[in-house]
Every structure is written in C-alpha cells, then in structure tokens.
Image (cartoon, rainbow, N blue to C red; front, side, top):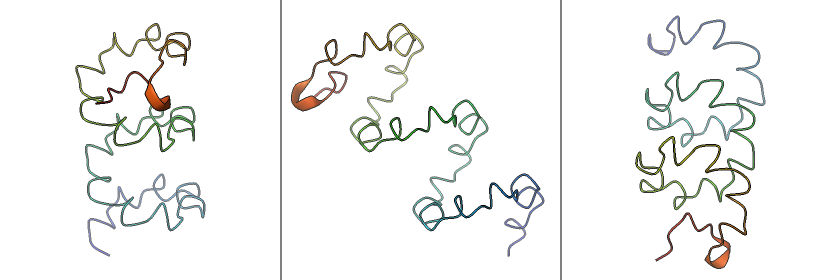
Length: 119
C-alpha cells in the first residue's frame, strides 16, 4: 500500500477501469512475478511508444505474431533485432511482402527462415 502504488496515476479511472481490472486481465499468469518483473515493467518497456495502440494492436499481438517460434530467443536475438537489421528499408512493406517472405523465396534448413543464420 505504498504511496507509489497508490499514486493518483496508478489509481486513475483509466488504470482502474472495468476492462483493466477484469478477470481476463487479472489472471495468475498475467499477474505472475515473471510477467510483472522490474525488467518487463520498466519505464522503457512500458513507454507510451511501446504501449501505443499501433504497437499493441490485435494484429501485432495476435497468437500468430506472438507465437513461441516468432518470439524465440533466436528470432529475438540482439543481432536479429539490431538497429542495423531493423532499418526502415529492411522492414519496408516491399521487402517484407508476402511474396518476398514466402517459403519459396525464404527457404532455410530444417524449416527455419533463411533470415536466421544457422551456424
């Protein structure tokens, strides 16, 4: 019940809304020590940019996009997620089109995308 936890911001009508406080959102998994860790809840991770409606859209947060394969340590590695690899040009609609990213155009070994270098 600290002053920080009970601050006007934390206790605002938006934060305490029926949606935010719903049984679906307040599950043991969602509220676990892992999910609520200082790293996950850091100002950087919880920034207005990271938490924007665009970034948190149903499409971006879909089970397909957030699958264990897509979110794997290999796919999310510092190298793969580096500023050099994630440039607007590399991530453009043209470069990331369904045709360019098709299994035919992106063949890899053992079913892995060719985007991921396998040593």
